[in-house]
Amino acid sequence: MSITPLKTAPGEPPRTAADVADTVQVMLARLRAGGAQVALEYARQLDGWQGAITVTRAEIDAACARVPQTLKADIAWAHDNIARFARAQRATAQDMTIELRPGLVAGQRQIPLQAAGCYVPGGRYSHIASALMSITTAREAGVPDITACSPPCGSQGIPDAMLHAMDLAGATRILTIGGVQGIAAMAFGLFGAPAADILVGPGNAYVAEAKRQLFGPIGIDMFAGPTDSLILADDTADPETVAADLVGQAEHGANSPVWLATTHRPLAEAVMARVPALIASLPEPNRAAAAAAWRDLAEVMLCDSPEAMAQYADRKAPEHLHVQARDLPWWLARLRAYGSLFLGKTTTVAFGDKAAGPNHVLPTSGAARYTGGLSVHKFLKTVTWQEVDDRALPDLARITASLSRAERMEGHARSADIRMIAARAAASSIG
Image (tube, rainbow, N blue to C red; front, side, top):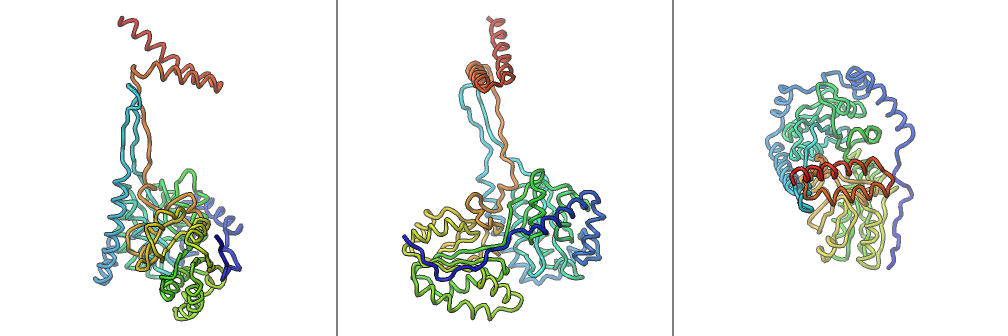
């Protein structure tokens, strides 16, 4: 098997710079010490927001009333898919009990976290779908308290459609605050919110770094970097469609790589010839973002077999993996490392990004080698329990004591011995 590069990436996606990490560390220290007042100062300084942080019920209702009914219907359609998929996932996470041996019963429980913080990015784009993906999934997992925050879009605050989506998805409260200060508000329990047990949702480098530094006492969905996408295509794929899909993902940003692996050289050449024109047709700032991503980070690889394409994909472990090739069942069974898989030319990553149902908060930067994306399972604790009665006690205590002494842990051994002695004494008194 061989892979021949037809276009290589001269650059690499930038990693978190030391100055970003240092800035976030200082900000979090100030926010931890100063609480809501410091968060408000950062909101004024960095977000340019002069209004109240907490969005009132009246403001939410007024914003929802301004959203066109057709857009509301579209948001509802996407929300229904996302909620139904998350609900089906939740049904796979079950409590269970098993009697391992007579008198030794163990089990597991699925316990929802009590408070979640959902960050909904703003800025260049208005991420309505991100609001649906994170908040809806937490709600379907059974989290009772969900704080959602998003940066303001100028003096209007959070855009109306975003507020509507956040409310529809089930946010307990909505905060107009972004960046590190927004993450801190949810983590530290500011502006009337309880301290979050978990922080989820995509964001810029400062948001990602804040989540990374807070991780430990607080859970996070994942360490997220720039979005990335890989297409695997054979001679059945349409070059125009493949090119459009690559450009569609490249518009995320200049640091968002897109890759193509194919067994068909004419397809690769046609795609590389078509991409520049498709990028040129985009509006700004999308055009500049896509042009930089294609120029600096894109790869096109010619593979001599489907297996070579699959091996390339497994090494890349992309966030989004799109197969436009024959024998889709083979690809579904063969591929092993991806955030989400998109099968067939009538599918597109954009469907998953916006409305199809499976979550679009996914592992990036190769993290799909070891983890999947955001799901109801991130909002659940799988905890275990056990109970022992006299039938299991003799063997369990004896073996526990034996293993403990082999490990030179005498205290453990004695805690097993004392139960065995008590059980024998109780049996003698009955006898």
